[in-house]
Image (cartoon, rainbow over all chains, first blue to last red; front, side):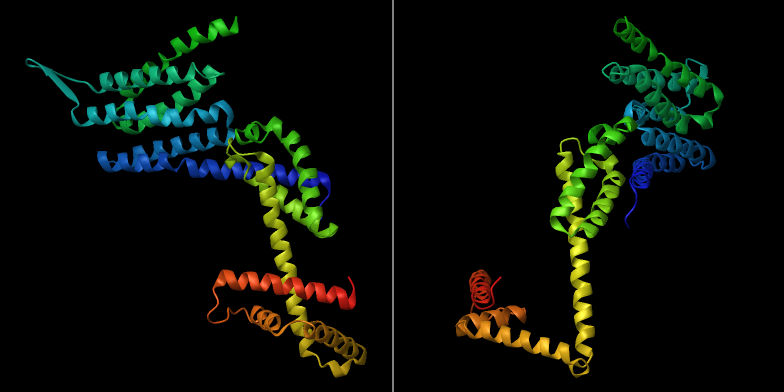
Length: 181
Length: 166
């Protein structure tokens, strides 16, 4: 077993990274479970699972990297349930009627869900020492979480969700500016 | 340092390594012979870094690392005990008559043990015999037997020291 100091240090470093990766792979499994549940609910497999895999990969990468980016995964996943729920709701009740005029509300629901999630993430991010990094990490996870439910409705709801989430950047930027000064 | 490492701050790695390695090596050297101590310390160090991402910030890092090292020490000791008992079994299979020197040494050891055991009371001998057989005598509670065994072992050590020295 006896190993020289530099080899031992390299081994320790490698095991540290492997340990982090193992932890990230395990802690990201809920993303896949969520995607599978959505696939069951919307009765469409390919799109939710493809985005679920992307969400899993993003979550693994962020958790493995750690620090502020890693800390953004949990709030992103939790607050991402808001646009996901909105998208699922729009999926089943996708139109509203005022008098005789009926119109689709998918984009509106996804925009609303994204806006709520963006503001909630911003609220968490401004308390962090690195608000922008936390917002970007949590925002991207929340976006992917929301898209699991919204992707099957087309590109406009997804764009609406992304734009709405980005509104959360406003309070983050406002709060970051005095710190920077 | 371990909290930063658990959080993913790679810049804490060198510092944590520099603090942990000497501490683990010193701990293992107190518990094992130097060659085994280094092996145990290396294994413990690698396990510490392997599990660094699961380290909980409310724990004391050194205590946590030493606990892992203690397990490694225990494992190595157990391995030694096992290999020693295997070699004793192998020795027993070989006929003592093949090696007159070994037969004489065995005879001396048996006589020495008999002399020490002979100086103990009948109760102490029975207690030690039950201990070797890993039995608890009927009608004796387990805590009472444990105390009796401790006393008998103490007297056995004392008798050995008195008859054969340290």
